[in-house]
Length: 242
Image (cartoon, rainbow, N blue to C red; front, side):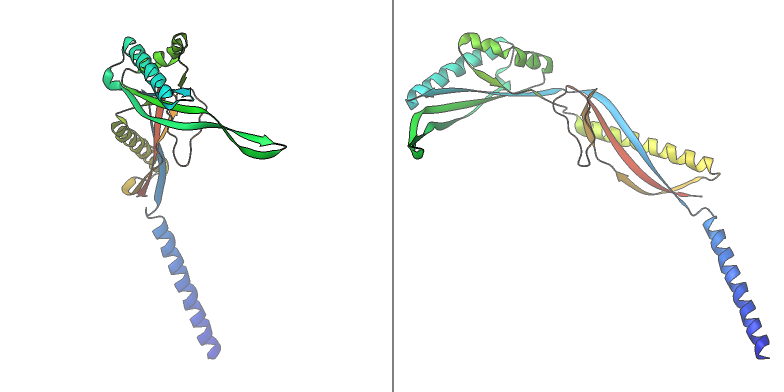
């Protein structure tokens, strides 16, 4: 009798396990899966703002003489830039920085103090302009100031785009549409249909120079050295499948 009871209990356990397993398989195949896709949006654009910086210096044993020489050079540079077509509002002369130029003295291999060589005054200049082509051209011609006796230290121009916020929205829209199209194709190829959107995550916004060898960065790349650029962004979407 006991053996018969054990056999009945064991049979019921097998039937229950088979029911649960079968039910799990049905639920798994009843369209409750998830489709995850990543879409890309990109666009080429031309910078519409240029920022160019440079500096010039004056040195003299007399502070007033150094300042007067700096002011003379400033007027020459200012006139030169205006003659090249720049607007007064685009030219910004920043505060003058000063330092003492000193040389360390040694006697018998031991430090013996400092020798004063003169005052060095430096003025920095910044130009912000939407006239990108002209300012880029001037930055290449600035060595003409050497003929006027001025040593001007020029930095490479930086290029920006003032409508970046609008461009970013456009890229998000493109990346989202691209991801949805991919998800619909996956659902179609698997014999199902695309369900509702579960989540959407935006990737890093990247700006690289066109035809450059720049690599994407986990923190985002923001190129300022190229006038012609490419913007890109990714969107990761998760959909229910049915």
